[in-house]
Length: 173
Image (cartoon, rainbow, N blue to C red; front, top):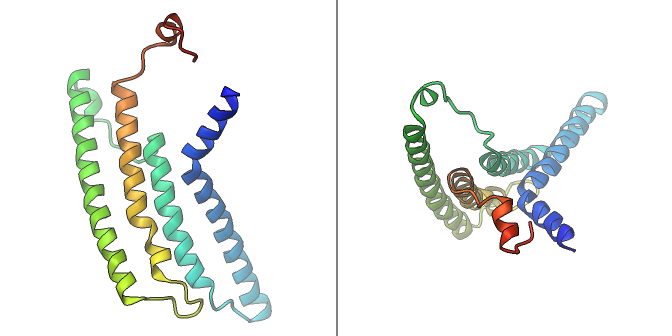
C-alpha cells in the first residue's frame, strides 16, 4: 500500500513535467498537420498560431518548474567550484535567494497582468480563448519554481538523517 502512495506522490510531484510533455506532443502534432495542410492542400489552419502560442508558453513555464526541481537550468560553476565548500554553500544559497526574489517579482507582476487581462476581457481573435488561460501559467509557475528551488536547497544542504537512524527509531523507509 505504501508503494502505491509513493508512486502517486511521484506522479503528482512530476505533474508539471508530464503536462509539458503532453503539450509538447500536441504542439508537434499541430505543427506537422499545419505544415501538411498548408503545403499539400493550400488550406492553412487559421487558428493554429493561437494554440501554438499557448503551447509555447505552457511548455516553457511548466518545463522551467521541472528544471528547477531537477537542477536542469544552465549554470556556470567553473568559478564557484574553485572556492572552498563553505563559501560555495553560501554562494549557492545567496544565488537561490536572488532567484526566489526575482521569481517573486515576476509572480507579482504576473498576477497584476492577469488582473488587467480579466478586467479587459481580452480574447484571441479566432478561437476566442481568454488570454487569462494562455498567460495564466506565468504567476503559478513562478510559485512552483520558488517551491522547487527551496526544496532543492533544503534537500541539498539539510538532508534527512540516513535510513539507519530512521529504522532504529522504527520509521519505515
